[in-house]
View 1: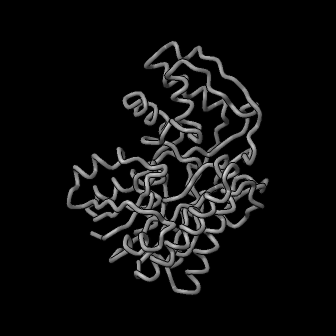
View 2: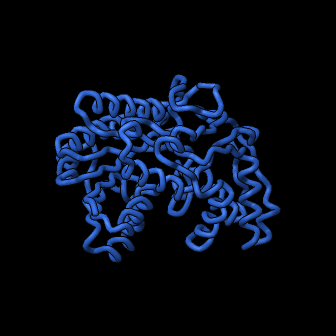
Length: 323
């Protein structure tokens, strides 16, 4: 049993990670300012694990909050960030404050608290304009958005802290994570929950472009598995690395909508006949994203359990029961 900090633990990925850690008997502190996370994601956990879960309402941009949260912490999972490429294009300053200054604050607080390992959410957006497919960790291009810049800077800072201060850092480049608790509401909702909500309301989903852009959609349980492996791995070669965190297959947006219509029509047959609307391509979007996960397989022993379609069926079931 370890004492663990999860920043952004009220968010989609953070709350699922927090739940798994609590189920395994760890003591978990969540640091969140609820700018994008939701207290509803934590209330059942606070009730079920009153002695295991501590909630600290605070902001990673505030060093005092960071230092308080890292007291006696052994493992630090840094999930807190302002996501969304469009949000970063609209407001690059706030994105930088949270994703760069906040990240640096947590690194410093973790260093000073003597945490055993700092595991952080990196991003596939770091690959930028690289045309190489599948994406391998050591071949990246130039970033295409302020968000992508911030996530690449995170990797650079983690590498410097590992070399300069002897910290153990592991970055996980998330590829289009989806699943239970991913919020379908708001201006920057991710594509899968947004499309699910539209289809359930018998509204036409809007695809940016011709729908042939593709993504390596990755189910939440695969991502949680990667985080646990990053915490538990003892092999020194596996530490101070960055790993693609994905399934390793790509799906076009047109295919995605077809799957969603098929799975949702099992609950409501009319959904199968909803038409799709095509809009313009979105600024800052990478045309294609596909991960090579060989490095994670070799050094972490990663073997993703859920395919994209298996995960999508699980997610659709969850949304149908909870929306």
